[in-house]
Amino acid sequence: ATAQIGVTGLAVMGSNIARNFARHGYTVALHNRSVAKTDALLAEHGTDGEFVRTETIEEFVGALEKPRRVLIMVKAGEATDAVIEELAAVMEPGDIIIDGGNALYTDTIRREAAMAARGLNFVGAGISGGEEGALNGPAIMPGGPKESYESLGPLLESISAKVDGVPCCTHIGPDGSGHFVKMVHNGIEYADMQLIGEAYHLLRDALGASAGEIAEVFTQWNSGELESYLVEITAQVLAQVDAKTGEPLVDVIVDAAEQKGTGRWTVKSALDLGIPVTGIAEAVFARALSGSRAQRKAAHGLAAGTLAEKPSDAVQFTEDIRRALYASKIVAYAQGFDQIAAGSTEYNWGLRPGDLATIWRGGCIIRARFLDRIKDAYEADPLLQSLILAPYFRAAIEESVDSWRRVVSTAVQLGIPVPAFASSLAYYDALRAERLPAALTQGQRDFFGAHTYERVDAEGHYHTLWSGDRSEVRTD
Ligand code: 6PG
Image 1 (cartoon, rainbow, N blue to C red):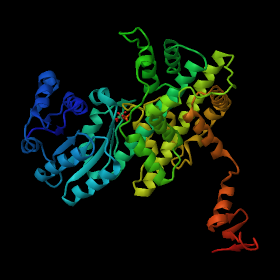
Image 2 (cartoon, rainbow, N blue to C red):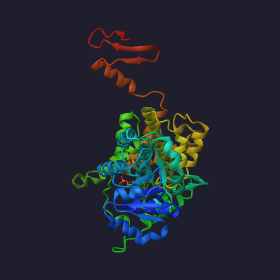
Image 3 (cartoon, rainbow, N blue to C red):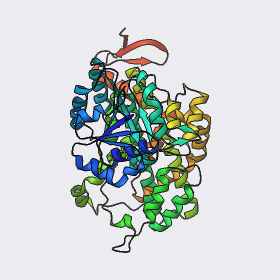
């Protein structure tokens, strides 16, 4: 047994992670259901480092030093269960199985418990950064038993991205917490992408800018507080010219966004936890709407109304959009961090939001300059009520709020859909409101269902005898 780590599932992500380990000096045992993929990897990249070629699961497990560490990189769902079962049958107590796919965190909770009962350590690890990140340094979010991190942590940290010398990998918490956090990361990714999309839509349709011009705008934005991987690649996608037609590539791509499920999971979980992740939810719904091609075709041509007045000052409006994007992005992250806090309470995970901000600074898809600020905010106050209350973010939003309102109202007048901008602003306004119409909701609930309400001036629950003499009774 010579290998420090084994990787099974050698599609692009698995291959690249295996190569990343090998490039860091680890001997990597390789396994894939069809050995052709293993051989292809060895033929193309065998010189990256030390690999052990294996064909059967027994051979694969036998190639590993103890405690054995196996990283599974197969499709989330049934395929993962099948591989876990095969591995568990030949592994021994104390060995570690790591699931590096985008597993649903509740599956990870279930799997961790089942493996623990058999004496095996199961680590659900969120891995972000796409193909490039997998090879050159992803962000890694491993959950599972803390003891397993002692043996596994140094390997994962060494292949992860680094920011200021700090690895973008840390032990997240017990059982499903790593995959939960990765799920919320993806939800934030959805919100971020939707917000960028809305900014692009406004620049294009409210200001009439070309794709190439908008690429320039994003390049410029990327040198300021919006600096991030997603803004950077947006500029590159917009600048790309289609070889076949000579048109901007973005104009020949079908405008129906797909999704593999992590954004949807985030929203479902947020609904269960009672956390308003409005930016993420709007992003998921916007993708769904874009994909309703038949409905959109049928509705095309419906009247927009006649209020349309284009912004007169393009420079000012571009700056307004930049600020609206920043403010809405802060809201999306604030909501995501609220969900993480709620998940942590629900499952007793003891998650540390500052740690997440730290490891998301590099490697992952949502890496951004302002994560440094989020890290600072949680360092200054680990019990922060909401990210938007941290002094830096509060000031950033207050400086942007007029721009934000101008952008949303202009978009509404022009008939340009900005669901994420608008819902983020509505969230901000609701959160800061002294009184909300929820008081009326409570009155209505009490009227039709005797659901009771609380009073602002006294303890307890009350009910008005709506169908009687309308006097009030205390119900507890
Ligand atoms: C990452 C990404 C990745 C995700 C893709 C596609 O962190 O590297 O989040 O895990 O699978 O972004 O997601 P959708 O197909 O749902 O857009």
